[in-house]
Image (cartoon, rainbow, N blue to C red; front, side, top):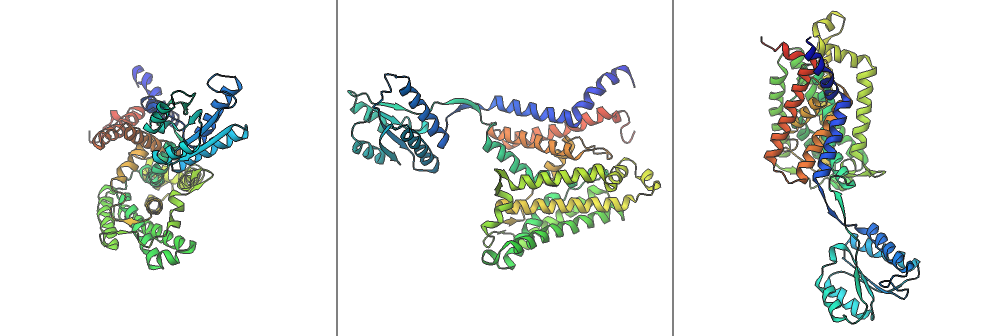
Length: 456
């Protein structure tokens, strides 16, 4: 290798490795954080506590605007956030024995009536979203001769991207793709591909919801019913994956052709079972526990995803099966000469890919509380993108499970960031395509395989 090649190979190896991908993920998070900075205001209970702290601090300092005999009126909207604000503010003020003369929770007419009933008011404490309500301007103008004033939580600058709700949104959205990517990583490491995983999502979701419906629907859908239906959805996709593996390993059908055909067959089967409709009427709300439920503040589907990645990492790094998968992808003939059966390994990885796709379908059905033949469209592209961006070589023999997880998050962060910036779907498609292309180019440059192109 030339000196110039040596000079660039190490940086490329870092960028395409797990640490490099983690650095890229961090830089993307910083990039979208900077682009999404905007003015924000505290809401709910935290806003009430913050405003109470400001009022108490002003009174303690003996400010002219905050005398000790201050008469305070609290105003907020009639929603959960508004009620939380009013409750926390009132509790904090009363704890300091301050004079809360009244409280109005609702629209302007109600607030106006409550203000009139409260008598003399020195300070109106309200939310940032209500500070410009005309009812306050009119009241202040009417009582201009008194010491009445308006106070609300001060706004601050913060990235929309860096919020708990957005992180939860990112992880929930990427859970299905990341789960599918586990099986896809194993398939691609063996130098294969599976284009049918998106259709398997639809098939699994439809089968699961259909069995719930057959077994009694919402009235009789206890935990055993939901478990049986979910296992059935996963099993159907596992069998479909195993059949694909048989075509690829025994009949030597190219993976692209075999899975392209299965993509059509399975999607059509999903539409057939659902009768070109969405199955949702008899699916119970309790089914959403897996897709939308939280445990310790973390989405259950994300906890499941992390457990699966730990298990898959152990399989690929610590077991004989993992070593055989890498060997099959690196050199099938050498693997066969070593006593490994590449045919059996390919059959196993396609079955595993089907199982993870089936599980992804169950999670999606749980998130949407329904099943339809349209689910999972284009997901195969997102999954392959996550695997490739995570450092797995499309030519087999190289790849890491946790690299795939990082790749999935990179795809999710890019999509989420562009959604926040209100970029159109066509722009997102262009960016996603360029990200995949860049990942493949980096891998080829890092490995030096670009010097020996296929076909000449």
